[in-house]
Image 1 (cartoon, helix red, strand yellow):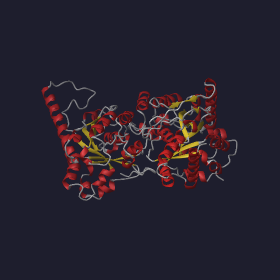
Image 2 (tube, rainbow over the protein chains, first blue to last red; image 1 turned 45 degrees about the vertical axis):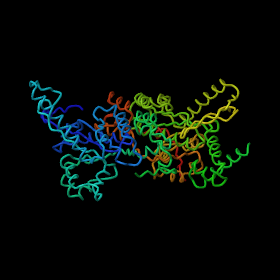
Image 3 (tube, chains in turn yellow, green; image 1 turned 120 degrees about the horizontal axis):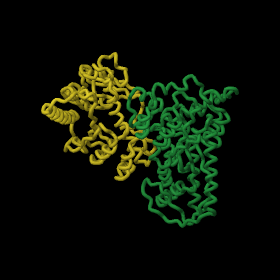
Image 4 (cartoon, rainbow over the protein chains, first blue to last red; image 1 turned 90 degrees about the vertical axis):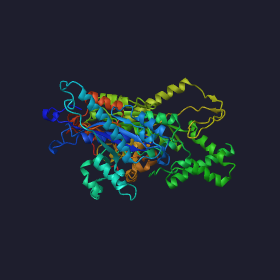
Length: 282
Length: 340
C-alpha cells in the first residue's frame, strides 16, 4: 500500500488485526479466499474521522496483519467431510500464493469438536504471546532511528485484535434457539469482533438491530458488502466433481490437482446430490 | 445393422423425441433403468455399455470449436468459466466433442469506453490461459485496423479450420483400420472403447460456435448494433452457446424473435448454477478504488495489471463520448427490428 503523504496521519499507529475464518473448507474455494481480501480492504478503509473515508489508500484505523484459515476437525460430523489431513493440505495449496493468509491446523487436530469461541481464544492467546515476546525484544534493543517506512516502529507495538471472519449466514445462526450460549455470543462480539461478508442482495444490519446484544456491540461488527457476486459454495463444487464436471477457475488449480491425485470427492452416486440437476442447498 | 444396434439407435431417437417433448435431456442412467424395466435385467448392462459406446464414440460425435469474442478488458475467471461450462454441456449431450476454445479480444477500433490497448488485453488473456490445455488466444481480430463484425471473425476461424482440415486429411490418406481392444472403463472416465475393425472416417470440419453470456445474446435487440443478416448467419450456419444464470430472460428473448426461434436448435442454452458475476466492469471499478481483485482474475493477470498500472480513472475515461464502432458503421442503413 502506498503511504499517505500527510505527516500527522503517519505518526498515528493503526490497530493490528488478525482475521480468523472457521469452516469446513471442504474444499477451499476461491470464494473463501475472497472473504479475506474483502475483509482486509474494508478494514483498511475504515477510518476516523469520517470525512476522509472515501480517499482511496488512506491509512485506516486498522491494519490487517494476518489471516488464518482454521478447518474444522473431522468429528464435526458433517456429511461428505473428507479427512482433515486433506482439507488442511488443500488449504495450504490454495494459500500458496498469499503472503498474509495461512492455514492453522490446531482446530483440526483436536479430539473433539471445538466451539468457535474456544478457537478464537486459542488464537488470541497465541497472538498475545507473540506480541509479548516482540515487546520484550524491543525493550531490550537499543532505541534506533525512526524508519520513514514503518510508522509502527517508532512506537510501542499495539495490542492486536482478533476478529472472526464470516458470512451473513453465520450471523443468522445466532438466532437459532439453543445453538449458541448467550455468553459465547457476547464474548465473540465484545472481546473479539466480527467481520461479516454479505452478498449484494442481502443486508444483515436488520439482524443486528433486532438483537439487543448485537446492537450493543455493533461498533465491533463490521458489515462488508460483496458487490461482485461470486458464490462458489463448496457443496456445489463437490457436486460438480462427483459428476465429473469442471471446477477450473472456481478453486485453485493446485487444489484441483490434489483432489484428482487423491481421488477425493468421487463418492458413489448415492452420496452425491440427486442426478437430475444440482439443487444443493446444504 | 445388428439387432442391438437397431435397439440402440431406436432408444437414442426415442431419447431425442422425449427431449423435444419434455425439453430436458435424458440422463443415461435414467434411460438405462427404463430399459431395465422394459427389457429385463440381463440386457440392461449390455444396453448401458452399448449406449455409452454409441454416445461416446468420438467418430460419431460432432467436433466443436468454441469462439468467444469480446473486450476482455480485462479477462476474468468468469470468462474462463464460460468455456468450462460449455465444454461440460456439450460433452454431456453425447453428441458433441469440444476440441478447442478460442478467445478473440476485440480490436481497439471498437472504441468502447474504457477499452485499453489490445496489446495488453491479448497479453493478459494469454497469461490467463497459460494453464489451459485447450483454450487459446487468437489475436487476428485485435490486429485489424478497422473494427470487424463478429460474423467475420466466425467466418475467419471457420475458414482457418477448413484449410487445416484439408491439410490434415491430405496427410493421412485413406481410412485407417484400427484393431479394437476393450479397455477397462473406470467410473467417470470418458475414454471411449473402440469397436473392433472400425475404420476411421474422414473427419468433417469442426463446427465453430459463438460462446457468449446472456448479455451478448440480448444485445441482438439493441438497434443498429447487429445486422439482421449477420445474426441469421450466426445462428443458421454456425451456432450459439449462451451461458446464463438461473432465472434469466434468455428463453423469452429467443421466443420473441422469429429468427432466433427458427434456429433455436442451434442455440444452446447452458445454465450456470454457481452464481458468478465477475464482470470486467466490476473488476475495473475495484481496481480504481484500490480494492483487491485476487481470486477473481487469474494471479498472472492481476500481477500484470499491477506491474503496468492499468485501469485508472483516466483509462476508464478513454473513448468517452465516442460512438461504438458498429453503431458508426451501421448508421446509414435503417435497421430491421429483431423481434416482429
